[in-house]
Length: 101
View: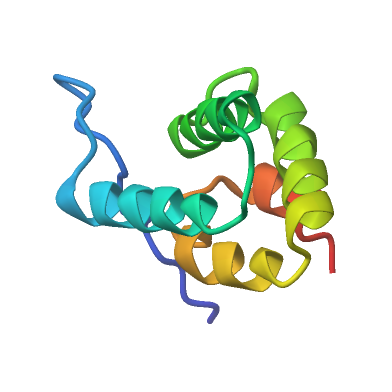
């Protein structure tokens, strides 16, 4: 029999705040984004993309492509680091858009 796992929620369903495990990953992703050498407008756009991705909003698929393009252009080495940070807080469809393999 195949085992199933219940996904751990990333946000409180009552107030919408991120749980501590989500907040720590979000903070780590922001710290990594600081190391990409982006200018202020690009950095702001990347932060917005990260929020949409982590919250799983309807904009997440489009933001996934923006995120992937910006990170690969700025620092291709960062994609694996973002994967390790974000893998547990992103939805499966978004993960497949960013890391198709």
